[in-house]
Length: 276
Length: 290
Image (cartoon, rainbow over all chains, first blue to last red; front, side, top):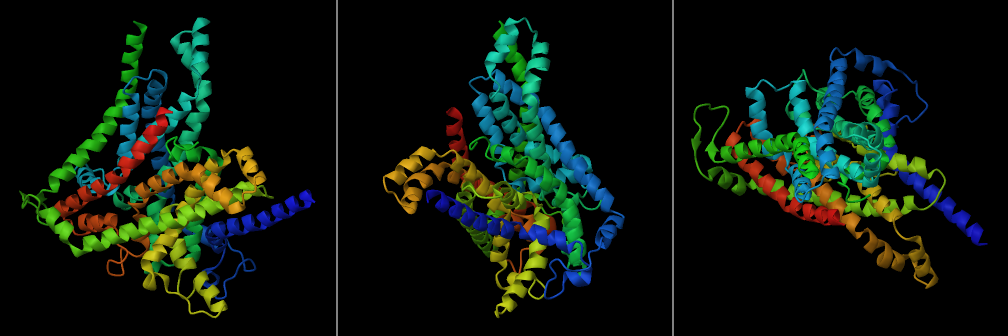
């Protein structure tokens, strides 16, 4: 009896859960489906859901746009570059804070967090002028620098919470066994820190890939990543839904997959360890 | 002795990140503050002069400022309302055991990884288009007059898009918090005859309160600077109906080249964000001590 009730509840929740999941995911699914339609089918009424002539034409056309490859490269260079640079700066800092904390460590962490609270628009004007005067407007280097600084607090915080979980006793044990500091770092700490570093990296590539304030304001044609490329489809004369869908699908697919893999770390990263 | 050495090393390891971040924060902010007291327009080079608080007077008495402030509050408030309530409900559903739970979870968090320009354009064109959009088709199928979303309800349309992007965030955090709830407590309450609603109100909701606070504060920080969604859908219009503070300052800076005015606006935005940040920092700081 109780079991029957349980199964029925489970079935009910299966229906509710899948319905909600489908509805929330629908815009992405719809974009995916539309990317395989011809432009005519894309705007057809009633909408064609599955039974239309599937075509890869849009993907060919988007990719044959002379500038497409450049925007993809820009996105990759900017997101990976800023993440690596950020890690280079953050690993030593987080390491020091986690393993030899002082009275001021907490204050420094909080201060770093507070820089993240500064609205981008508050420094838009000076940054734009600095970029203009230094010839950094519309360059990859400029964007890498800005995105590094924007995400640095998150990187430090995430790494700090990961490093903090490495038990100090292990270090003591290694020291007792006569390991030098260098050996301690290479053989004991690094293997334990790698998973944390990897998930920090993943989350930050995602954040940098999707960043859409500085990438839109500081680039024009040369350094524009995919966020700006997609934005160019917003002009009324450029409303080709099927091509917009194909370009969008290619822009979000790799990040969506990465995001699914990093979903557990997401909460920790975005709440600065406040919710685990 | 060893500690002294370690401490010096630690300081050395921290300094690049700290120094760069300090410069990144203080230099542009100081420049914004400085510009905000100048008459400074890029279209009129050489006419820069100190004019005191005139820029602030103009910015803060401009009717557009109040409209933009109102829009910002509506955008933040509306999105929070949808995402927090929706997030709680979704988290409660996802917390129940059912078939394919893991896959549904992936479907639900997916919108968070979609870049803002994509989600805005997909929603605006393929879903909300008054003639060919899917919503229009659904409305006509049921015999209703299709809504011309961006003409009739421009701000609400943007709220919907932004809410869709942030619902996964709220859901995921609330779900994480929900999963740390003690199952025995719920069972005990059930045995004592507490109904579904009283269990939710007296047990679940208090347990979630901290996670809800975190969701509200973090989302507010990001929602205050919504930009790309507005840029690619409405350009702040019709009129200034969808212009928020961020977009207003952007227009002043990069479309009207009014460096002084935009800087004054920037400082106002920083002050507004700081009010929120103050509470967030205290909350997280408290958590760090535990």
